[in-house]
Length: 97
Image (cartoon, rainbow, N blue to C red):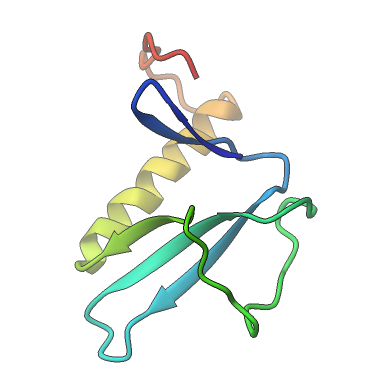
């Protein structure tokens, strides 16, 4: 579920209700990942993008430099390792999420 709380956009992953779609401009100079609230699916379920429809409440992660995608992927991998207990970092914070 994607929501705004106290001025922060929060995307809560794990319920299968956020559809992630990668899109790119024809010139490949700008690409994005679109997050949409699209009902209930199994986490990781492949959903066709043939009939992709842009929505007013879409959240976009926009990239103009491939290195920024690498940084995001690295941080997501760190979060995965922390959840699995395989990476011990003192990164507990006061965010209420």
